[in-house]
Each structure stands twice: as C-alpha cells, then as structure tokens.
Image 1 (cartoon, rainbow, N blue to C red):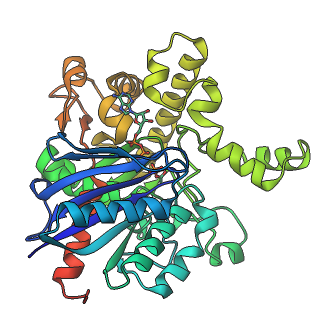
Image 2: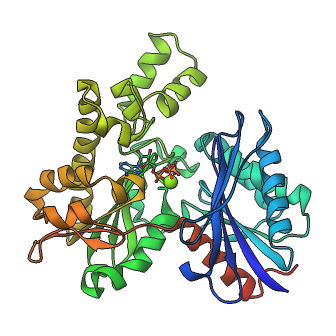
Image 3: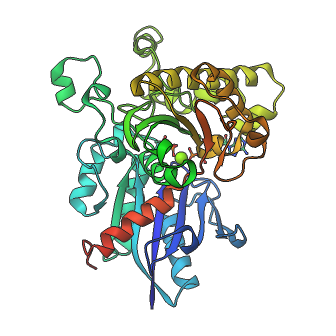
Length: 401
Ligand SMILES: Nc1ncnc2c1ncn2[C@@H]1O[C@H](COP(=O)(O)OP(=O)(O)O)[C@@H](O)[C@H]1O
Ligand SMILES: CC(=O)OP(=O)(O)O
Ligand SMILES: [Mg+2]
C-alpha cells in the first residue's frame, strides 16, 4: 500500500487541501489532487481538481456545516476515493509560531497549547489552523501531524528589523515584528536560482506576496532581512480587507473618541478595511479592476502606492535592489497591478517589458533584458513547501506512527 501526504490550509471560511503521493520527496508531479471546502458556515462547497485542473469532485455539504464537519468529510472522501493507499501524515499551515517555533514540528498536545498563545495575534487564521489540527487528532489520533509556520522563515531577521520603539520590557515579552507568509517566501527563495539565476538569487531581492493577505520580504542571499508584516498579519501593506500599517493614534481615537470596543476595532481593521473599506465595493482585485467606479480606482491607487512606499523602505534595508518578484493571487495574475508597481519603481531601475508582463503565465521575467533591476513573476506553492517539510520529518524518522 503506497503512502500519501495531506496538506491542509485552514482559513476563516475554508479548508484548502493538497494531496501528494509520498513515494519520494514531493514534487509538483506528485500532486494527486487539490481543492477545498469553501463557504464553511453557509453552504460549504467541496471542490477537487487533479494536477491539470480537471474536475475530480464537486459537491455541497449540509447548510451550516462546521470546520469539524468539513475535515471529517474531506478525510472520509480521501479514504474512500483512495482506499488502496495510506494517509501517512498531514501537514498544516499554521500562521503564527511566535518566538517558540523556528522550524516545522510534529504536533502533540503541548504544541497545540503553545499555538493557542498566538490566537489573538492572528485571529483570522490561528483559531482555524488549530481547529483543523484538533478535528483530525480527534478523528484520527494516531495520524502524524506536522505544523509549518508562516513566521519561521523570518526567525533570523536582524534584531534591529524586529524591534518596535517600545520600552525594553515589552520587547522582552515578545512584542516585536515576526513577519508572515514565510512558507511562501521559503518556496520562492528555493525557486529563485532556477528561475532568475544564482547571481540574482544570492543578491538583493524583494518578493511581493500580493493576495487577499499581502506582504513583502527583503531577502539577501535568499534569507529574510526585513518584511512588512509585523507582530500580526495586520501590519504593512494595504490588503483585501485589512488596513496594513496604521498610525497607532487612530486606534486610540477609535477607542477613546468614537467609543468603539476593542472587538469592534479589531473587526474594522481586519475585515472592513483595505480594498473593501476604501472602495466600498469589494475586497477582490478582479472586481475593482473591472469597475469604472472612481472609488475602485482610488482603492487600487492606494494599494499600489503603499507597495511603492514599502518597496523603497525594503530597498533601503538591503542597501539597494537587484530584483523584484511578484507572487500570490494578485502578483501572479494581475498584470495591471504589476505594470503600475513597476512604473512607480522606475526610480529604482525597474524597466518593465510590457509585452512580457501582459502575457506572463507561470514563472517569467517581466522586465526588459538590460533593466538595472529585473522584475519577475514566480507562482508560489505553499502546499508543496509544507508537503516537503512533512516528508523530511517523516523521512528523517522524526515521525513515528
Ligand atoms: N486573474 C486575477 N486578476 C486579478 N486579481 C486576481 C486574479 N486572480 C486572483 N486575484 C486576486 O488574488 C486574491 C487572492 O489571492 P490569494 O493569494 O489566492 O489569496 P489568499 O491571501 O487568501 O491566499 C483575490 O482576492 C483576487 O483579488
Ligand atoms: C498571513 C496572511 O495574511 O495569510 P493569507 O494571505 O493567507 O491571509
Ligand atoms: Mg495566502
């Protein structure tokens, strides 16, 4: 009976998954199928596609089905569909590992207890990451589970890049910049030599992970030296529904002058702001780019402007820039956003190849051949990165059934 590895990325309203054959270290070719159960809490939609995007399964769960129901349905479907194969281990994307976890780890009750400490620092993600872990542990107590952390890739940031200008005792308590999207950045760092060549890969590179959640990371020789997200995944860039960086005085004003509760402020900053809040239309870049509403244009303009400001800051942290990489749903698919960002970065030496940008599909250079700073699109693959970590832990014998 051959083995499979399951990767889960549990979010606020979805459980995304990828299933890999585990006869060797996972590669794209070993992807068996992927998909997810979305709209959890409403009428959950269970969709699965094969490696080529062909439909494998399309069904709905009962109205109001929970995350636990979704996990049970997914595992049941896998066991029934692949009854001649064994699920050897499960890897989870866990957004916040704080200062406790700098590498993937086998999950046990002690690890779960530690993960809970960071729930308030990642309210959109951590509770659901933990819910998926606990649902699986309850339903399949002997199934090895591994946690891979968004924060781990940034664990060796220069100390000065982690400090807030707060009293020392608060910094000592862990109130500092952690950084996120690290699984994505780790994958891009691994892909850079093959896509852009070693000279660039080991140079000064800023990677822009532009999705519903968005951040940027300054890398030198493929190591994180600065990043836009901070203590939480609320900081940095303007995002689909999140503010990004905000004058902390605004929070005090909302609490003290507007009489909002902390919970109301949290909901405002995490779920009602960003592209959604500024446009008053949508958090989805596709909708805003297709809209002729002036508010949509203002939201897109601010989104691009904030990227430009952070790019300048990250180039300063690097002492210059050799390459700019776009990834994430917007970074990989929105040529218009890439065009605007690169135009705004002309002062840094980025010269866009308009045709290459318009037709980019998969990994591609989108700057002209002799651009002082090259620009690239590299699709990320957080699931594959997690599957590789699970394999290395299992293969290294550090996971026993
Ligand atoms: N073809 C496209 N054109 C523009 N934006 C796109 C396109 N496809 C996806 N997106 C954007 O990518 C976002 C999702 O990015 P993704 O990285 O998948 O999100 P998440 O942060 O949830 O992982 C969507 O909100 C949408 O705005
Ligand atoms: C950390 C974060 O914001 O993740 P996502 O982009 O998946 O929301
Ligand atoms: Mg994402």
